[in-house]
Amino acid sequence: MTPLAMLHPGAIFGGTFFFAAGVWSIFLGLRLRYDPIPHFVRDYSGWTSVSLTLPFGGLFMLGGGVSIIGQQIPAWTNMVSRIPIWVNQVVAIPLFFSLVIGLSGLLFVFQKSLTPRWYRRALKAGIPRNDPYVMGKFKALDIETQKALIQLHKEHTARTKQRTKNNTAPKNQERHHPSHPRQRCRRSRLRPWTRQRRYSAPSWHSSNQG
Image 1 (tube, rainbow, N blue to C red):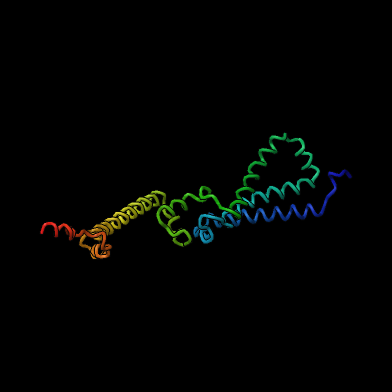
Image 2 (cartoon, rainbow, N blue to C red):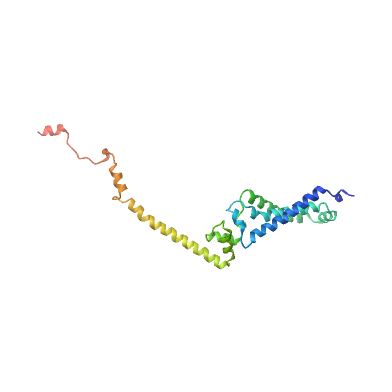
């Protein structure tokens, strides 16, 4: 029996575990992502998210499990040895990026550009980001309606800012007016030597005139 044909129970068990965990992660992650009620919004606020990283981490574990189990099968090993190296590298590229995205989204931040498009449109429309049921209602709308809600939200925000600006402008003008109580109070607190005094001639000057 050649060394390639020797089976290692530990490798088979580890490969099987990785393969099963990868399949489960991909299935659960896609379900949370594409379910009519998107429950992934509960734990995602623009930073880390376990739900969104599950498919990427699962893809890496699936590839790792297949690789570990394949090394214990002589026919698989012979077939892989005949494949050019660049083919193996091309296959390894998506697995590497899946690992990077999974670890980054789990430990640091999950990129918003990798979230569903309807989710990004919902944020632009002012939908509460952590409410899965409202997000689900928005997701069920067609794209044109979603874009119309985004435009309405922008117009509402602009009107609110303009109304707030118009309401605060007269108050600021009145506050800086000379007749405003605050301005009169400031004028009354001026120091005596800063006020204008009448000129009085010295006593020696008046005595010389006499």
